Length: 305
Image 1: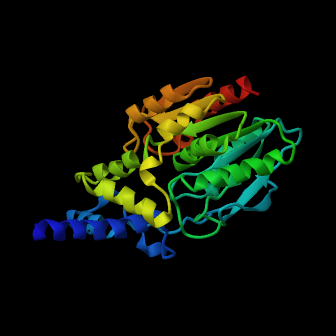
Image 2: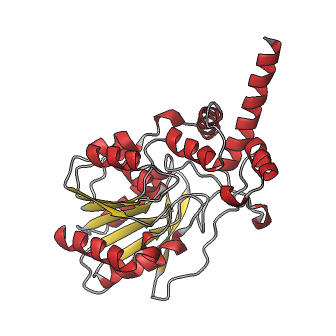
Image 3: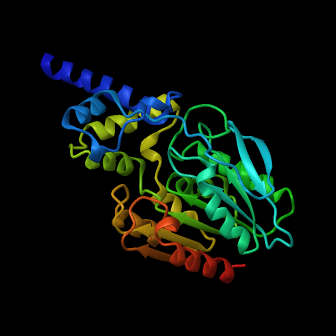
């Protein structure tokens, strides 16, 4: 019994370290942990024990077009880039994924601009020009989605669309569920099904069993950041999404399964469409399937304008 108790305590200590690093970015760029597939067995063991080092995401460039830097007060201060087009049809607000930043969305923003829409690119807390070094994988970020949405609505703009990739898609879904915001339409790329599933996928990609460490990591990650992480459930959030939705997925995604996507899609209650990119993983579909992404997004925006 003492042996089991010691093992249990050690597992929780490991989970506490791991959870903190998973939800807090490092300021030291040299500490970044390589992708799981490139790690040696020793490095994988070290990563499992001490957690993954993620440098704080910083914007790598700025828009080439005229833009305004906007600071918004939410649960954290967030920085946005506002790009206005003449005779705009509306505004698309763009939200990045985990361990990313708004500069990664400039190409998508350019396409929405070409379609006639102004854009607002948002840095979630802990990234780019926004406050802090914390991330909650879409949980607290959902309030920042609400803040950005209300900022645009206050400008009396009627056609407001939301675009999000991975964590950004999850934050959009939770914001609609929790705060009852009503965008004209949403474009969601590769949202995960539940917090437990996305954490388990990271263990799976390292070739190690997810039980029981994944559950401990979810528990401590939520506890350290002040929320019940087992309740972070985009599959359930989907049941409150009534607006037109374009759901995009890469068939070779090793972080989100097809069954997660199918369940989310089935739970959406508004007009919806699912597009699958056969050779894409958990990555930018625009980079790998530029013509198809342009076509799919263009048709969606045209249909629901």
